[in-house]
Length: 256
Ligand SMILES: [Zn+2]
Image (cartoon, rainbow, N blue to C red; front, side, top):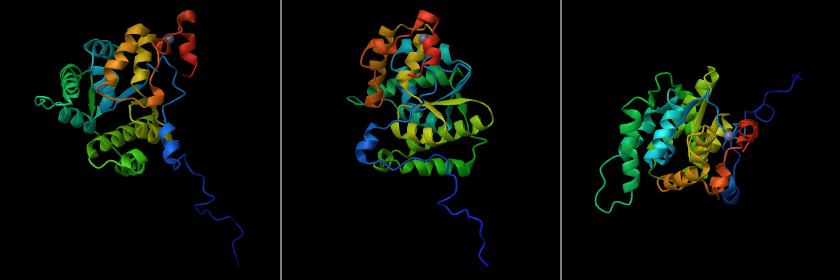
């Protein structure tokens, strides 16, 4: 006699949200940055930094200073991201096109890591199985699949997303700061909030650390060392302005 109960085949099982397959055109327009984090940010969340955002911040000494002041005590990077920053901090040969990146990387080490403002998450509690599944998902993204020599970069993103998933599960709310589109989409699929350098600057404006005109200039400085996806770039300083009229209430509640 056949069992009348529906069987849990892959077709009827509930699925967690997963990365959809993209056409090239769809993918070019897609980003996974969090829409449910208010523009002024979440001061109670741990900030996990990807290499690009760290470099963009350090592209300007002024940005570096206000950033450290704003995030002090909750600023983390996984070990692989720190290794990538160290690799980029090698002295530049004359005419090195990566000169600005190298200077920024050295500032991240000297001004954030060594003083202990940027804390290393060594991954002691990292769930290896979870990490492998995030890494696999990341490696299937069109941008990543076309790369051949960015193993350290991908590992840093996968490890950061894994750390945020595990922290969130333990009630330690964590936000992943990355300028990378593929990483933002994988983070979104894993219900990890991803934010980019533009969002960092907007937080600094709301916190009163810089005004929108300065923030717009800092965005341009940072963009020289780490590109933000085109659809996320502000076109004017006004897009980074705080809506102070009601004590930042708009920035607190409205999704940007
Ligand atoms: Zn505001």
